[in-house]
Every structure is written in structure tokens, then in C-alpha cells.
Image (cartoon, rainbow over the protein chains, first blue to last red):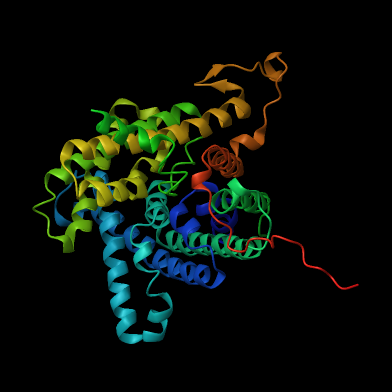
Length: 200
Length: 219
């Protein structure tokens, strides 16, 4: 479990080794406080949606999953993409309303980032990886939190570097997007250095 | 005629969705370790994008604007599921290598971006041409990155040997870094730099420009 957690943060980082959630990653990494907000929102949404999707996948969509309804021999795996997209979009909407009602302070801090995550490749990708790698419920929860933390760590690192880079004298064509890519490449190299490290 | 040709060719370099609008990089780079996977994913994306733009443009007058996003996502996701199933049926090995990335076309920002920005306001034929052009622009970036990575990472192009490897008695020592994730970011960064040097209009203005004249420092 600890190994899975650590691997999902560093070695198999969603942003840096699978390139997931890149649009959000590049768009909101200009300032460090917005990056922290998006990072926390992503950890929350990921942490809820992957285990939820796991339950749905195991009990409704998997081959022969509808046996408890007296319908053996079904295979609804092809529906998984649409199901996951629907669940994540509904979850984001629900979370926004709940936060607004019960924790207005948190809603003000995170509210504007939540809709961004409704169609985020990192979240859908996390659920699809969970289905493909056949994690059980506990593993999928650990993977969800780990991959969320990894993505948040990556975006906060990039935002911190980009805040400093604003004062740097970058070549004209490389200003902005180009520099962000190259810095991301260097961060990815740094993260891949954790590849061999194993928790005892 | 010229008008529609321009709709198709504009997104190739001048308004390229990836390098100018930063759309659709999610899922784009992970498949660029070899040209074959990049080509398959690009073709799947072009087909899905063109069909989605056509369908959404056809029904654009009948969809209330409050639910237009949900309608678009449902149409796109259904097309992606069909593409995924077709790949699994006719090219099983390739679909295994692409793993979840075919499904992730559904969350690709290019598709939703083009249908939202163009197909909802235009007639079906221009929408499909625009979708084709944007898909081709995306494919172009993907193929350039994939060719560089495959050529220098394993000495082959489309699995045909180009640079003879040391292991096979040739002279080329493959660069393992090219097959790892960081190289994709750096190659794309350099590609953006190259395009922006050729097209200075796309350059971003720095937030803090250096002072034109160095300040006089009192000794």
C-alpha cells in the first residue's frame, strides 16, 4: 500500500509521466496561491470520484457484474467512459452546492476551481487507470489520494518556478508557454529520480 | 473555395490548437514514443472531432444553451466509445499499446473547444472543415514530436530501422532519455520556440520587461 502510494505520487505522476490534466496544469500555474487551490480541489475530487467509480464499476459494469440482479452474462465495460464522465461531472456539481451550503469559506477559496475539474483528463484518467489495473477498493482509494497529491505537488512546483521566472530574461520566442514546457520537462526529470526509491 | 481552404490550413501553423491555444496537450504526448501510436491516436482524434463537429452543428438550433455542454460531452463520449470499440475489434495490439489514451480523447480540450467555439455557430460543412484542420494541426505536432523521439530514442521510424544501432553492429547509441516522459516536454517547448521565432506575432509579452537603459549606479 505504501509502495503504491509512493509510486502514484512520484514514479507514475499523472501530470509528469502520463501527461494528464495538462490544460489545467499549464493554464492555472501562473500564481502559486491559485495553484495550491486547484491542487487541493483536485485531491478532494480525485479522492472521492475514484473509489465511487470503483464501486460502480465492480457492481454494475464489470463482466457478469449484474449477477445479483439475476442477469448473468452481461458485459457493460464499454459503458465505463460515459459512466465515469457523468459521475465526475455530477460529483463536481454536488460538491460545489454542498460546499456553498455548509462550508462557505472553503467554497469561496476553491469554488472557482471546481468547474475546471469537471472535464479534467487527470480525474477521468485516474478512474480509467483504476479500472484497467484492477485495483480493489482500498487500493483505488490509496491510488486516488496518491495521484491527487502527486498532481498537486507538480503544479505547485511549476507555479513556484514560474513566479520566479517572471523576472528572468527569457529569449523572446520562449517566453511563457515554451519556457513552461521546458521547466516541466526538468521537473519531470527530477520526479523520475524517485523511480528506484522503495519504502521499507 | 478559397475561404474553405483557409479554414482547413489556418490551424496547421498560424492558429495551431496545440502550440498557440494550449489545447489538447492532455493525452497528446503520452503516445509519442513511437510514430505508429501517434498516427493511430491522431487518426482517431480527427475522425471523432470531425463527426462530432458535424453532428453538433446539425442540431445546434434545437439544443437549449443551458444544457449544451452536457449534450456535447455525451455526443463526443459516444463517438469515442465507438472509436475505442472499433480499435479493439480490428487492431487489438494497437489498442493495448494506447491503453486509456483513446478513451481520453473524450476529455481532450480540442474537441470540446472546437465544437463549443465553432460548430455551435456555423453550418455543418464549415464546421467539419474547421474540425479537420484543427485535427490535422494537432496530428502535425504529435507526429513531429513522435518522429524525433522514435528516431533518436530507438533509431527507427515506423519500426523501420533508420540509424543502425550499436547492438546490431551499427554506430548509433540510442538515447534512452528520448523514450522517457521529460523529453516530450522539452521537445514540445523547443518546437514552440521554433514556431514563435518564425511567427513573431505569436510571442507572448513578458510581464516585466527589462529596463531599456541600465540605471546609473552611484559609486
